[in-house]
Image (cartoon, rainbow, N blue to C red; front, side, top):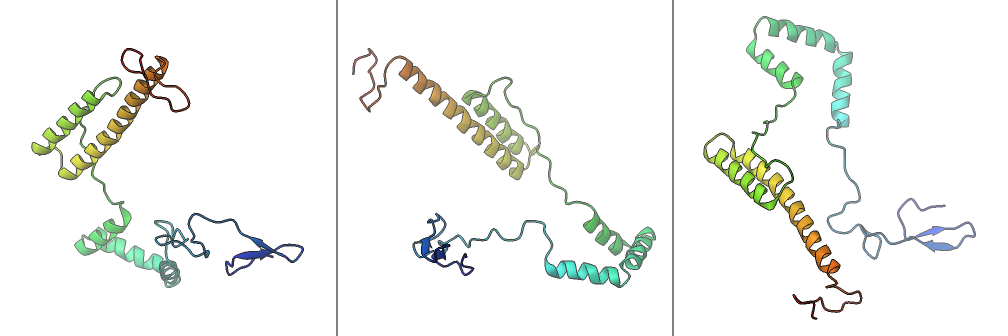
Length: 179
């Protein structure tokens, strides 16, 4: 039978104690490590019990009549009602990213440098907001990391293909193939 309180041992079928495997998110005493509560929390966008209860009460109290009255007032041009309805009906608008030039074909470090320059120019000219520029530069930097990692892998493969690296940690060959 397993322990509900999260103790260090479970009783096995023979009645003996069995140790639990250690978890990376816990300390040696089985407590959660600092910065890790052990719970992911409520999912983003989920409703609290209070909100669900309020919705039930509104529905029971003739919520459809309230909505109908609000729609009637909005149709008559009541600005406060129109604003309140639109705020809750329409999704929050997110800014669209202003397009910037990426080099055609395979991405290279030089091409990404050119794209970064294009973004800086768009921000400087006011065609792209600073926030959009930061987002675009972050994407360019992520792409640059991938490009640099690929270039490094190709260079390592070339050195290995020339016989420059030997298993066992021996030094790599020099330019003439000498150690």
